[in-house]
Structure formats: structure tokens, C-alpha cells
Amino acid sequence: MDGLVGLLKVRVVRGINLAYRDARGSDPYVVLRLGKKKLKTSVKKRSVNPIGHEELTLSVTNPSEPIKLGRPDGIMGDADIDVAPLLEVLHMHPEDLRNGAIITTVCPSTKNCLADESHVCWRNGRFVQDMILRLKNGESGEIQLQLQWVSLPAAK
Image 1 (tube, rainbow, N blue to C red):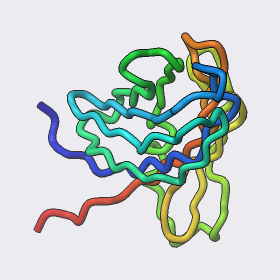
Image 2 (tube, rainbow, N blue to C red):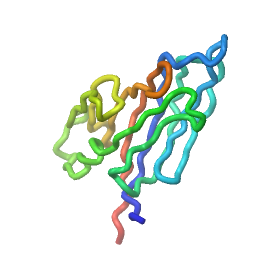
Image 3 (cartoon, one colour):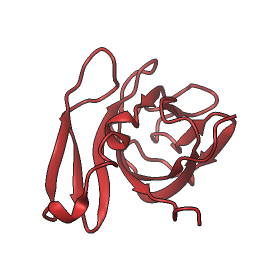
Image 4 (tube, rainbow, N blue to C red):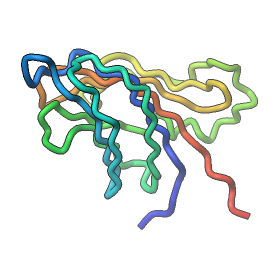
């Protein structure tokens, strides 16, 4: 078992054009899975464009393992979140960066679930990555997220 690398805050901002599951819409929620750990947002009643701004914090022990996003029933689709681009910038010296600086850009490809370019930035004293994920294995939908790395205090 790998040791704890750090904490990752995942802000689930909103869902976009999610699949209808009945005449009124859906009752969407998001489940994040990393290894054996599973976290869930609250349910947004009767919406296919829910706005949540909910934060979930995951303990990262294996930085190469993607975060799985999707409901256990698979009914709304799913996506993988690659945290590697965010973790790759952690060695940088933030004192050299201005607030809002874009450090790297990740483009959509067949290797990720990005719907648009995703930027890793230095914002308000933290490394953050904004992204919109296109759900796969479902009819439609995208999820807007923000990843934020939370550094752990160095061991004494």
C-alpha cells in the first residue's frame, strides 16, 4: 500500500445536459471513487442541469490512479479524472507565479474524458485545475469540476 501523497479537493460545480430519466428530468448526484474510497454529492431533484458547488475531499495514495466519476447504477454515464497534470506542477515554486497564471493546458483526446481544454493554474495560493468532463457510457451529459490540491504538512 502506498503512503498518503496528499489530499485532493474536488468541487462538483454543475451538470450540463444530463440524460432525462423520467418526464420531469432526473435526480442526479455524483459519486467519486478512488481505490476503495467512495464519496457522494447530495441528490439534485428533477434537474438535468444541476448546480451544486459541492466539495468532496479524497486522500490520494497512488497519483497514477484515475478518479472514477459516476453513479453505481451506471444509469447517467461515467468518466475518469486524470489527476496527473495537476500533480505534475506541484514541484514548482509558487512564489515565482502570479495569481491566475496558467501553468499547463490539457487538450481533449481519446485518452481522457475532457469536453474542452482544461487549465492547471496558480490561483489564490493553490494549484487548481478546472475541467468539463464528457460522460461516456450514457446518453448525454457533462460535469464541470474544479480540482484543488491540498498539500500535507511536511513530517517533522
